[in-house]
Each structure stands twice: as structure tokens, then as C-alpha cells.
Length: 121
Image (tube, rainbow, N blue to C red; front, side, top):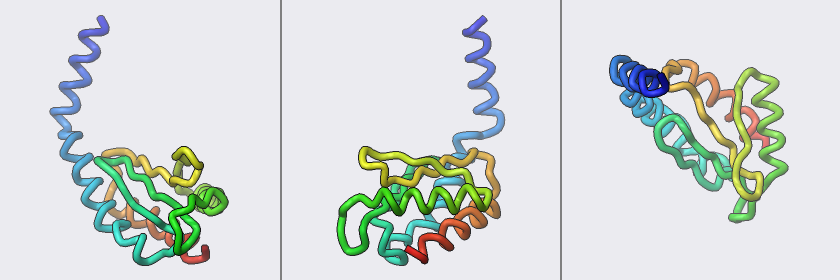
């Protein structure tokens, strides 16, 4: 029974080209948020693969983790309809993990919400 379920999952992944969709999300996120370290002093690094991205928040001009900034960003995101997660050993990484079938428009909208708060830090 469990083997049949696993095979069905693989069939759906292939049928719906979910790997291709994850690659599309990666390209869209990279082009949309990849320049954040240059635009926002609080962003130390943007890294990701597929649909999972991490945005390292630091004290501007340093590489020192900035967990307070993460708390502020998460509060703003949640209040404005963006589901993001915290991550990292120092609680300073904003994790984005959208569905692989998210639209480019929703990615853009979510990025805009995050940019609003990043610009204030």
C-alpha cells in the first residue's frame, strides 16, 4: 500500500512538472529578491534552491546576526498576509518556502510586503 502511494506521488510530480515549477519559482525569486543585499543594509545574504530561500538579516555594515530585525520582519509579514518562517542558528534568517505552484504575481506581491519593512530597518 505505501509503495503504491509513493508511486502515485512520483507520477503526479512528473505529470504536473513540479520540478520544473520549483525551478521557475527559483528563477522568479532570484530575479525579484537577489539584489536585496545591495538594496537593504540589513540583508547580509540571499540564498536559495528551488522554492526554499533564506534571507540572512544582519546589523547593517556587519555580518553580525540581527534576530530583532527578523522579529520585526516576521510580524510585518504575518500582519500583511505573507507567511514566512524563522530559521538559522542565531534566529536571524528569514525563510521563504512558497508552494511550487505559486504565481509570479503572488511572489512579487509578497516581496513587496517584505521590502516595505526591510526599508525601515
